[in-house]
Length: 457
Image 1 (cartoon, rainbow, N blue to C red):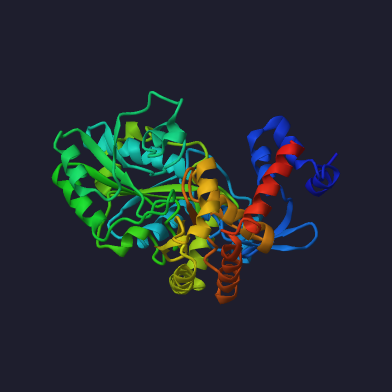
Image 2 (image 1 turned 90 degrees about the horizontal axis):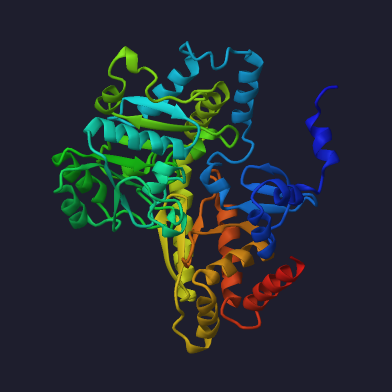
């Protein structure tokens, strides 16, 4: 009997949440139901998701940054169909297929100063490779990382995670030291011991949306190199046009020793990660023929992943998505900053390109403080979650809180959005903020949803 995916999905329609509860992480459906995000999306296109009733949802999350080119982009789809139709020999292991070489060539052309690429399956794997290569190239073991930094959840990446909620219960971890993000004095002090292999840092942190101070990366690289250590720039979320340049660190003149990318490189279809490094770093690991497999992965350089990556790079260039991210991002930040002058609970708008953070703060007017204080007392970050819920339920816009115990919302729309999508978000946020501090408005809706969902469970 032939396997028919459409038939299987039709036969099991409506069982998604039950299947997750029974066989996968049972907390996922609980959380989604609690905040009223338990929707079933039937299709997606560009910057929009659609439910079974045909209602559109504006996606300002884009799969944590995966869908830079939008969902179901026709160029990426065609590349994958072409790759399947070609019937290429896959994962021979003892061969040198063309697609990984072609994708590496195009990535490196956009990253001057880096010479070679290792392909893998995710951002976390790329970070694991970066940590291993840095330790081998320097002969040192200690990794420096930043508070609130996020680099993945596998063991090595977790050892460089600056958020305690992810680390708790999984130790002991690899040797490392946490620094305050942007603190050059702290970096200099740690380097004096002479045992540091590298500093791993995001140019813009995904958790909390903190931006590296101007010149920080350049100065950090100079300090690191003076002490024989390396700079690793984690561009898993910030890379491939997200901030208006190909890689976020390119806003400075710095040249890191190692860079990690992933997410958007997949085109939203086939997971792929990549570690880019200098010749010096790479050749220290692959130093002889008998070390050819000293770091490898069974599924590295898969045909579909490489085809998706090549197609994404083509779309970034042909549709000027980096330029669009810079232009639309600047316009959106300006409009949101204007909102902050009307609503003092919106304390700061920050970001670059189409990676934007909205930080909420205690309102000045006494009449507006009651809701803020009540929610903060219940849980720090609950006010931001109320805003996220309001945007979703009232205006069908998908966003996320930027991290646990933070009053920050992160915006990561596809890089294809235009003025219409930006305006829809600004209008929706204004509507939500109008009611955000009124006891009978949005807080009542939010509280009622939480209570009703709790009773249902």
